[in-house]
Image 1 (cartoon, rainbow, N blue to C red):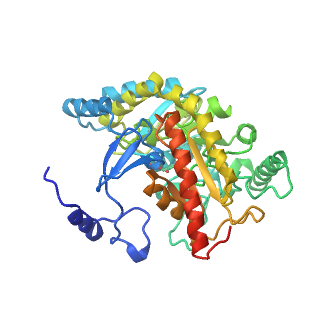
Image 2: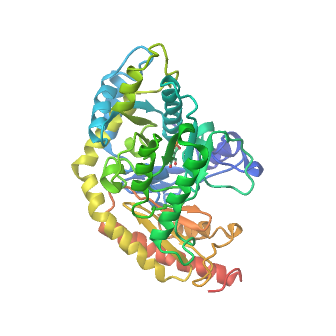
Image 3: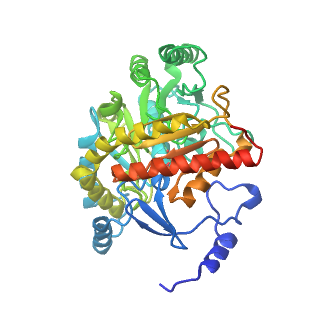
Length: 461
Ligand SMILES: Cc1ncc(COP(=O)(O)O)c(C=O)c1O
């Protein structure tokens, strides 16, 4: 392909490309830095500046960039079969992958439906749940419980579950049938309570909602085991197990959204059982399943739910849901190779590196602007606060995450800034010296950000 000069590409982007999540003032007119290259844990911009890919793209470049084995698989599969209609045919890669995923899924979760990404996975799970109860003769079971600080996607129904209230939200949502529970984020919320009391409070709230709404109207609870985009919120120790138990007792389906926690980020293909000790009824996955080399997602559904449908009185009840690219042969072939690579050392690397990554990041807590460093596995969040005594977040306008990211980028590390937070979820192939490098850049970048805030008289440390 002919090399087009960077300024022309920039012009094209500004004139013709609508970026995701734009503001009205810049919609269709926004330039975002072109990434021209990726290699291992690094990405390079058009000027050749090399950066550690701190967020692994969007929590997805799990095995790292430019993996030749994956590239070969994509090429080979495209040359053999680039596409087949899942409406009336099947293909070999999806046949193999559904078995591999089922073998890794906890409990009796052994029925896989493939989608094109995370939002479509969540959307499929919710549509399945409603269909399930309709077919079983309990159509009144419609309510979905989700949580503040959750993120589940950008399609109408999945976005309706998102828990970040934006002060000026201009979008429409499906508000009927959706109930938001409190976030399990204990930072700033303890107010003299112990973490156990905080956990009890969350459980009390869930029980109250069930009592008020009546479990016969509640279809499902959906939650990320660790809320990722909400700021890497690790729930109190027994919270997920207790929620799972309550759901079981009240005949409410439990959907674990493992779009981020799945496929290696916590050192396992699925984290629900191995890390959190729970067996959900449905798991949603995406992102790391192909390490970002191909858009693929899906849901794994418990066999007992499928059996219940098969033995219902409505053999004519069609699950009227499917995507042109469900079970895409190239996506499934990539996922198979990706899982093989993960099992051949990458998952072990995560189990070894993650505790080091977490403990070294926590050394940043001595910086006055850093209020909280949290995370588990290879996902973490540094949350900035105004000062040690006052644990209010820095004002939204200050966007301190962006200031830190700007300084860290100059030092060779890309972050994911989110208001007063910096999120990190590096490729799973990082080693100990990469961790040292990341933490030392962060220390310098955060210090420079503090100096900038001070010199501008915005904040005084
Ligand atoms: C937990 C979770 N679920 C669902 C989604 C939506 O995935 P996608 O952007 O692939 O549609 C995301 C995306 O970040 C996510 O973090």
